[in-house]
Length: 135
Image (cartoon, rainbow, N blue to C red; front, side, top):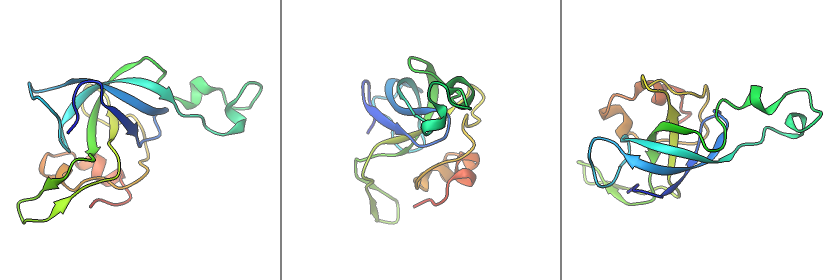
């Protein structure tokens, strides 16, 4: 369950590493897998030693988002147990999300780690196609 001030890992290559939930959309109290939320980027991802000062790749070219940016995101993993209609119970190790733009397209081009299969029910097929595995 993701609510206000919850910290989530960002698993795409948009440039954000850790984000904080600012609002759950669609007037819900808390968000589950597949729900859309508004997040604030808290920590940027560093792309190796060549992206530092004096490197060949600038951080603004590598990172699509900066610290403090307000973006929309989709929750793809939650640490809270979730019971599926077939009776199986799923629980992930962390809370994770994927940053999206206003039209619902992912900002990053790659995803790291598995995502929940509930995304298929909520029509997030673009995220499922980018993910290496869904559980």
